[in-house]
Length: 329
Image (cartoon, rainbow, N blue to C red; front, top):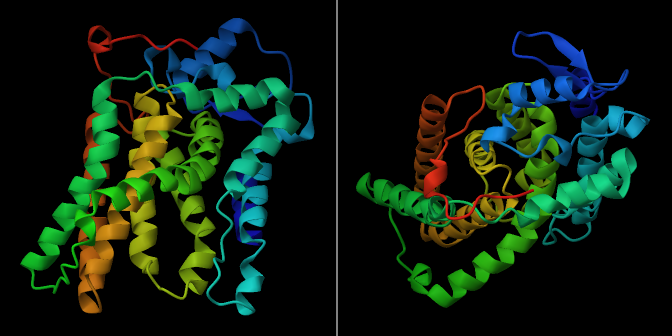
C-alpha cells in the first residue's frame, strides 16, 4: 500500500489538468471560466466528439480535500475495502481473498465526499449510456469469445492437450455465468475503474498513459488472488501483461462510446466468462501455453487499437449518420 500511495501522490490528486502543450493548469486553486473549462475538456478527452464522458460527469468541486485528492483517496479506499478479508484466508484457505465490490463502494464514497449527490449522480449516469452504435455491442460481447477460441486453437495446434469436456457447449450455463459476472465483476469493478478513475486520469495524462497507469493499479488490486488463490488459476506474469492490454482496450471502448459503462461491463463479463469455460480445458503445461496465447492475442489487439485510434485519445469515431439515436446527457 505504501508503494501505491506514493505513486498516486505523484499524480497530484490536487487536480492539475495537463494541457496539450504540456503545461499544467489548476482547476482547484481558483475560479475557472467557461471558456477555460471547454478548452481543458476538449484537450483531454474530446467529449464533444463522443470520445469520453461529459466534462461535468466527473469534474469534482474544488472546495474540499476529497475533491483535490480524489484519485489518491479512491485508490486507497478501493484497496483497503477489497483487501479487508485477505487475512481471513489464513483461517479458511478456500475463501475468496478479494472483496469484489471495493471499487464500486470507493467510487460512491469519494464521489459523495468530493461533490455530494450531484457528483454521485453524474458518476452513476454513465450506467445509462447504452444507446451506442450496435457495432460496439458486437465487439464487446462476441469479441472475447472469438479471442478465447483463437487462443485455444493456437494452443492445440502447438501440441497442448485439451480435455474437451464439452462444458463450453452448455449455452445455458454460459449465459447464466455471463449475467452473474456482469454484476459481480463488471458492475462492481467498472463503475470505479473506468467510471470514476479513468476520466480523472485522462485529464492529467494522454489516454494511453492513463490506460497503462490504471492497468498497473488494477492488476495490483488483484494481488490477493494472485498470491492466495488456492486454484492458482491466474499465472501472475501472464495476468499482469493481460491486465495492461485489457486496460488499453477498455479505455478505447469507453472513450469511443462517450463513456458508456454498459459496453465496458459487457466486455469485461464476456472476457471472464469466455476464459472461465475455455481455460479449464487445459492443464499442466498446456494451461500455461494457452494463457500465453490468450495474452499475446490481447496484446496484439491493444497495439492495433493504439495505432488505429491514436495514443492521445484512444478513440474510434463512427460516422454520426450511422448511429440510430444520438446520445443525450
